[in-house]
Image 1 (cartoon, one colour):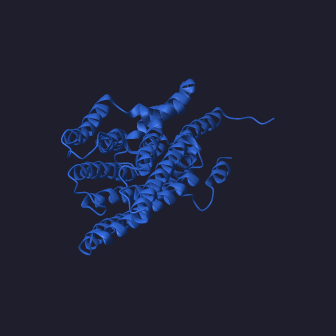
Image 2 (tube, rainbow over the protein chains, first blue to last red; image 1 turned 180 degrees about the vertical axis):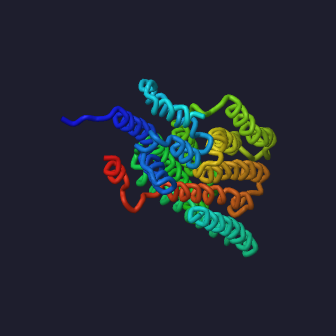
Image 3 (tube, chains in turn green, yellow; image 1 turned 60 degrees about the horizontal axis):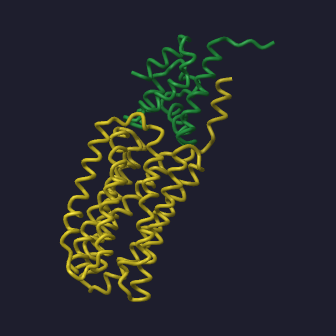
Length: 96
Length: 269
């Protein structure tokens, strides 16, 4: 039987939340953010769970001041899992 | 670094196009009103056709996904509407040798405004929570100040200007000021972001529209308007700015060589 660590599940939930919010803007917006994360930080969307500052920086560089509204939506998507330390740190970091 | 150099190239090309357009119309004016009329009409059709082509590419890229996909559809509608307006204007003027104002062309010009508003609103929808009251009030005040000169001009037309012509010519700067509200909000929202250049071009384009339409209204009311009038240079710049704005947006969100979605999942696994 396969077992999953809690952090892996949270990582997956974080990825899904980020993907949903960005896809609600547009599919190219999601692709752009993914591409920029890869290019500038050599990381992928799931890695934002461990490095939320990368996501914050990429969103700021694309959407400027409007990134706060996108961050708010990601926060809302992840609100029910805020008891997890990793997600809590992610929310605090990107919402600075 | 590559992105910055491409942006500089784009800015240079934009400057050359803007200066070139103005220069072409001014030189044509020297050659006579008939020449400048033909040159300006053809240039309007080329400018709006370019706007339609680039908007179509944007729609194909966004494929109706999310709010920005819907925004792209509205932008395509705007460009098609204004392309039809310019075509009808040219047919009236060059084929039937009739005064195109007022005409069916105005129906298409006016139709472009709600579509443009739809584009701006849908684009701002995902980030609407970042809009502050201060931002909103400032944008409304700036936009309202654009409409003031046209309302003032509306009270003093030449006697041979009909009420319908007066209302129609005055409605353009007022509609420009309405679409200017979300455009200014967009500038404030996307400040320092990559998409800010697109918004700056759209915002300046709408401002050129407003200035050009006030000029058109004044020239019409004083019976001094002819196709190729200096206000046409400013109106032409609007279409050029919109086209470059759309091109910049296509460039920012262009499809990457390989889809990285699968590789992302593979990497995570």
